[in-house]
Image 1 (cartoon, rainbow, N blue to C red):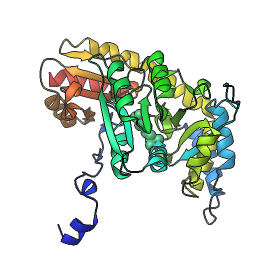
Image 2: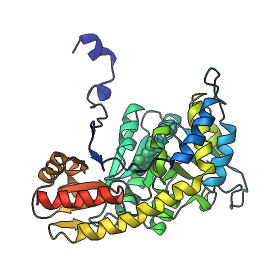
Image 3: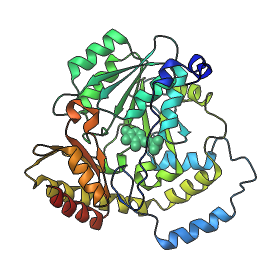
Image 4: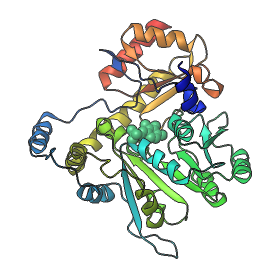
Length: 365
Ligand SMILES: *Cc1c(COP(=O)(O)O)cnc(C)c1O
């Protein structure tokens, strides 16, 4: 490496590996928690008509006013806080929830500040902590993937993290943390607690109605897992006093016009996406039962659109490679180590894809 690069680029950045996404080619893609369905043809035609008139020669509405209003209603953001101070709730939009995590981190970043999250968890919490010069603290989950409350409360007391992220349900384990554990964390933490509800369409439970009940609660959502991952659109909801601070560091045109127009259109036709989510939830149960019938696997119940399993007999990496050879791409979580040793994560696909996966698995074992 040139000495100029070595001298100039922060050491923690030099030691990072770029976020790697494998090229799926023509494979059945069950690795990234995507919704396998596109919109129906008739809706695509209607959408293309709208896109025709999108003024891409102009800057988009910097506040994405129309889309924000639609999202606020659709995501069920309560108008007022239920707490005594009675302040308003507000939202900020991001280029995916990834950007919102980055905005949160930038807003609190100063030397010594920390981000805390349970481990294993969503990798971006850790990565963005590094990008923004924050320290990351991962608190191991218990064997059953529930929160280790004594360890969480101890870490909160000792380290006073500025931000705590709780994915609800958690990625990659798929379970929901207990509501009363989350409440205890909200009460114990001096910093902000972000409940990340990326998998809300499949979990059907939420902290959104409780915004304002805790001064430090924020709720994050995304349209990615509901079927619009290509748009890059996330939302952070919470008390106006917090959101208005984050909005100061949001880049002015972070939600492009095609995303604004498309997301607004999609949410006006939300029943299409809700139907798809319902099918995925049914398929999740089908796949859970099928996978559980393999005596070689320990399969973990999921409230998301993916299933984590542990290979008890055989080798996870060999099974991963065997599936890949047969044109099925899943996620090999084994290399993360710890409780993920010998674990594979499978996104729920279309019925025919799930069937193909199961028969491909049989050939690997
Ligand atoms: C997939 C995922 C996200 C992704 O968000 P984007 O809106 O696509 O950036 C956020 N949080 C968790 C826990 C996820 O698994």
